[in-house]
Image (cartoon, rainbow over all chains, first blue to last red; front, side):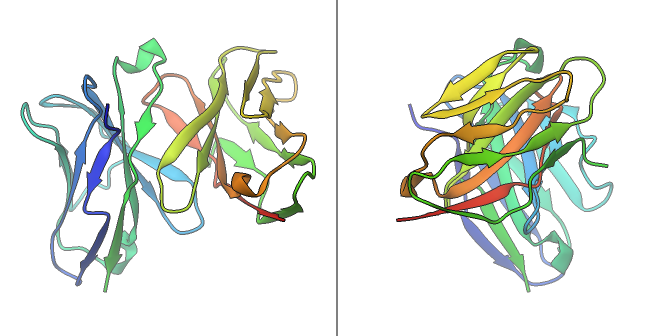
Length: 116
Length: 111
């Protein structure tokens, strides 16, 4: 059973460009979470999605950031008009059941975004 | 502010030394507590967890006890190995989508 897959592993963008980060959850997992890790900091929750639904986006910046988890295909974290402060590692996690079940979140290897 | 505070790193130890990484949390009620480990170039892996007061989580020689009275969940290992070199994150969660992480502690074990 493959783990959580993220691609690309490294992404370089110039200021003003768009960044698209992809996450394929583990097989059988329908709950996806995105986190951001700034240098020398811990992970900060961004958004929690189920298939075709955003459940909790309380950690998402109000502008330029969006996330989706379509019925088919990976979850996408999209950052429009990137700025240097967006440079970070973005981690995706998935779980089999809903948050109240206490199921473990399994993390992907992350996408390291560098904005020039 | 962050609801999980853990010992600042980096921590450098010799092989077979005793390890303690402190973690305290602020919370109302009774969250679940976790330690995650991040090896170079990889995502986080769950190391151990405890879901109620006085529970002890353990895995791979690491242990942590949920101390409600001191709101702590310190990570310990009696004898570290070079392969334990990684970044360790303490986290607390009321439910799975309200996971709050500490800033991480980088551990380097020298042979």
